[in-house]
Amino acid sequence: MKIEELEQRAIDPGPDKIIAPGFNNATVTDKIAGVVLQPIQKTPRQWWITLLIAFMMLQGLVAGSFWLFYKGVGVWGIVIPIAWGYAIVNFVWWIGIGHAGTLISAILLLLKQDWRTSINRFSEAMTLFAVAQAGMFPILHMGRPWLGYWLIPYPSSMWLWPQPRSPLVWDVFAVTTYLTVSLIFWFIGLIPDLASMRDRAKKKWQQLTFGMLAMGWRGSAKHWSRYQMAYLLLGGLATPLVVSVHTVVSFDFSISLLPGWHTTIFPPYFVAGAIYSGFAMVLTLAIPTRKWFHLEDLITMRHLDAMGKLMLGTGLIVAYGYMMEAFMSWYSGNPHEMFMYMNRATGPYRFFFWMLILCNILIPQSLWSRKVRQNVPRLFIVSIVVNIGMWLERFIIVITSLHRDFLPSSWGMYYPTMWDWAVLTGTIGFFLLLMTLFVRVLPSISIFEVREVLHHLAPHTLEDEGLAPQPGGGD
Image 1: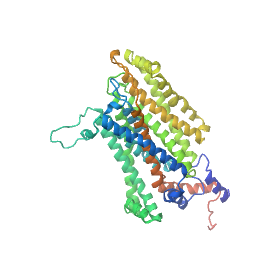
Image 2: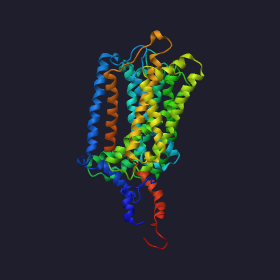
Image 3: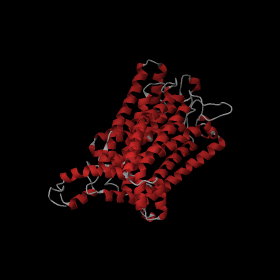
Image 4: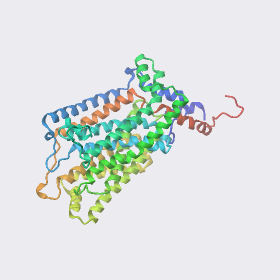
């Protein structure tokens, strides 16, 4: 194949390529660093529109939080017996979205999956921003958020300590541990790229900013040796977090005696659902970013196809969890469990239940088709549908188990208010705002890891194309 044809294929690399042919170390660095270092007037219009929309949505969170602090949690739709409303639904949803970043970064790193290199930085940032949204909800749901520090074991002259049997305390430790390890893992992975940005920056303030963040990185053999050791160690530490964090979140429900919550399948079921929604969000964010900044030659169809397959696989695990819930409610012979499941399917919230089945089980089965996984608009639509479906799943778990429990005399209905919706849309806007700024001010694709993959693949690619240097052939 001719060099000109290789350059053309860099524009459309094909479905089976990790990185487009025709790339070398310099062009990879220029491509990724150019997104950050380009003049502000050259930023794509779509980026500005997204930033504006996200900022406007963020005002819902600001207004909703202010009104909540002023009036109390009664401004939400929570009533007796539905004491858990959108706050806990959104908390579990955002924690789940943050799971794909750790999976892509840590587990696929240990498994030496090269296709992760173009999306791991992006998904790690998504993890941090999603966990930041999740961390707000338990504090807001307390009703007295200024007393949130009571959840932490701090030196107290009155010997007040957190209640170790409270799932709220477990969540605090699980989420803070997950956020801390993910933040360190993300920042350490950025250091070599920050040094590359420092060396390529033209403006003084950019050189100083990236220079301070790079922490004196010079790319020496000692630096690389210590870096690889630290990165693998953190990958090993982060891997159990994928399982542990959402398992702890599932204990919020499964340790209770409430029908619909008291089940042992929740820990693996929640973990699979978290990874499912996390990969859906990675696709939802990566597809537009890839288009706006012309990164199709680095985030290729192989990446999208692999994420589609993983989303399909975890979706099947989630579907199995749904079937086991139905089976065990019948097999248990417990009238309360049987009523709970029938109430979900035929009760006042049945529309949301069947929408969840449609979004999480039926529509994602289209991912069995290569034509769907290789079609960017269709894949984008499926990812949005899964995100909606996973939110509905958390809504069904929380609300339908609470609104009709053991005593018909205590039954009630949950109607979210405008402030519930304002806080939800506000956190979505806050998340989009952070992601939009991230892709513009920091390298959203790992430069050095892509170059490392390119180094390993280049000889084989050239041989495949008949362009490898022959012995005695000079240059």
